[in-house]
Image (cartoon, helix red, strand yellow):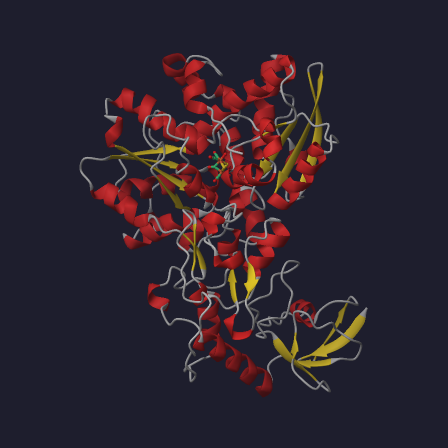
Length: 571
Ligand code: HC1
């Protein structure tokens, strides 16, 4: 270990620690801007500078290693002046549009400037060319506004190191540097999976979700439209954060009440079609195992993941389940089954979904997802956008009552809610597949080996006479490892779950900011708590699912199910 002194306090830390880590150990929070633990420690922004006695220049605490006997000052006059000057220089090249920015009141540059007492910006931005002013609106999911970029490179790091996609990087040199796709192309024209992880880590408003709230307001204001809304599993454990509550707070009932107050005609649940997905996908799996179909079968509900496999592993598309995602099953049923049942012309149904995900916006616009005869899902809002709409009408979250979802597509089970966490789709599927095959209750329905934040998880289960080997991966970086194994013929799994974002949908690119490891873990706890609180925890026991097969769909994998609930992929 190494002993050093920080602000007159002695601290002992492991050799190789940084000054930032050592300070944290004694409760000194050195401000940072570009730093992300384990992902982006590059000392680029110079906000975390500290004075090391005897050193010639200030040191970036996020990368400077500790040394025996070192004496550090984190708040000397030189340190404060340097941080302030750095901020002033960043601000001089940053639009002063805070009041109208999507990140107003949730911007790290704004809050740092306030904390550092920045009162004036004395410098004027010189003219810049090379794309600094080109706002990229090409993607249905993500907007890139290089004017607001402070070159911290967190987005570059997350795209490369977590997702393995590398669709953006620093281009040009010196003052002309911007972060952009190659040749400053639009995100729609490059290998972006639309996951939005970049928007979660961006400290400013340089990368944001596409704001679709205007479309939803217009539909709600249109007396000819019957506006239905579905809510994804992971939104319920995150939406309360938009009102200052702890991550993982279960907000289901209040969210339903809030959506009614916004004016939706029917508030229903993606969880209903998550249960339906389990029935279709479970049966598809059993069919592939018993009839010799392509194995391992891989889940298909995460749209960033689907875009990624289409781009990078088109030779493996036959491994994907043909099931549409729950969002898209819901959309197809809203304009067929629901419209019929309610006697509403599907042309007048406007179908909105609330998702933790930016890629869902892209998914909803895919040409092939129109089996109802219309675009099945008209518009997708992220959790953050829903938060904004609710603040706009002054929702008093704390005093909202808890309300129930509407029938017929509002009833769901614990198996559906766990879709929102990595491993959850697999666990939900196993709960059903086990009982369908063995015709006996599963001794313990909690499939704990596939829970948690480990990148790739495996389990082997005895299901009747079958030994079923499953794997679960989250992040595209981990997905790649499994896909390479399949390509090499080294994957002896039967069933694989892949979710695009770290932690699964609870960590989706449309979730409240901040979304970091600590927040993800709390949301995951919320998800499993929600599962335990549900009266029914297995999809095949959902009476509304049994009813929809009896009344409308016929059988799993039947003709109607095939048309409305399954899809194909585009290499
Ligand atoms: Fe997801 Fe899914 S779990 S993909 O993460 O299968 O977004 O929450 O809605 O569709 O159900 C997201 C979450 C979501 C779908 C379901």
